[in-house]
Length: 140
Image (cartoon, rainbow, N blue to C red):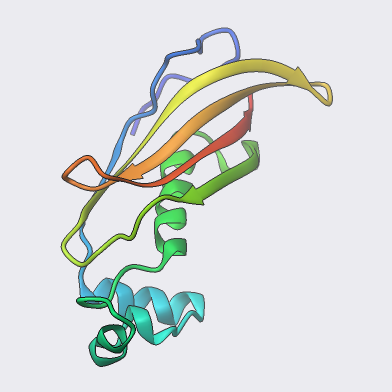
């Protein structure tokens, strides 16, 4: 995929990252992520356990959505350019939710001898419900 290089001089506040649209969350994804991450919390893979906990069904690991945000960023810039990622969970991602990750440049600045940008990032489902809000600092 050919992309225009991102430089401090070519990016501006308000520029957006190409969105990352993902397939609907399903049980297989949750099972595979649990194995890959070592997070075997039964709330994410055991329907009976989730129901005993008051949930209608299992739901996605918060860190799965964080991984998706990491992919959003690393499809935009090289991983070695990431300086910081902050996030807070704003809602539960349920089975069947189709998550889209988005980002927008909100600040340009210099720190520690580097030109950097701050990007607001988020995940939202197909209904526009935000599930994670955060920001990332990227060196250019």
